[in-house]
Image 1 (cartoon, one colour):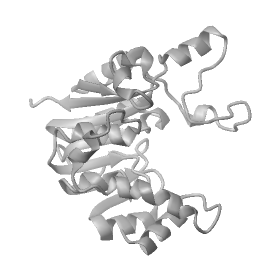
Image 2 (cartoon, one colour):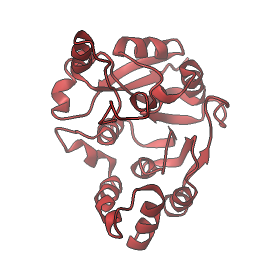
Image 3 (tube, rainbow, N blue to C red):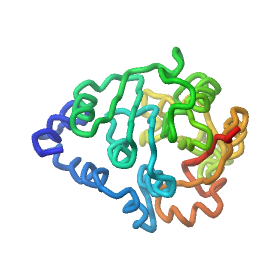
Image 4 (cartoon, rainbow, N blue to C red):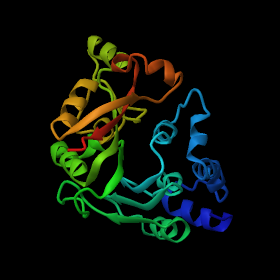
Length: 252
């Protein structure tokens, strides 16, 4: 993506506090445009959620087809498109300019979809990988969402689900202190007009694993982000502020 295209992309979807603000976004694009997915494994700490996912998915690449649910502007799909023949995304909000650029520059195809009102518009067993990062806590019907993911996954396919961890030690201490844990990125919870970043559901590793198991998805790996991420992996139940679960669909 060249400079003028990147500026146009940024201007629709990010807050422009000054005319050069979009340049702060460019390093993120450069990071996502690495040609070799395995390069994401080089960072030991892996603080970024997307970096964690990409580093782990590198073990499963290449893919025939990938779907990202809650794709937003589609930037997370850029590195995956390098190792996938068909790359798709869906989101409840339409980002027309970004999606058109993604289609033209990277052959990434995105479309608007409300998963609470509709099934995924794909045939059974369509995808090798289905990702859903920071989305499941926002949907009304989590069972329908996971059921649809399992349906469109190929046998032996992998799904990646990322959610906040309500059992994180900080949240436990908040509860013991009589405070409601804030699992979202809302910084000023007292002044916010949103209820915990519009999170409708809360998950622990156990409850998320049980939900996935109900639809034939078996947890294979658990990751998290933040400082010292790989140390947090040792006891994700209480040390992880977020849970990134890699689950596979059985071959039968």
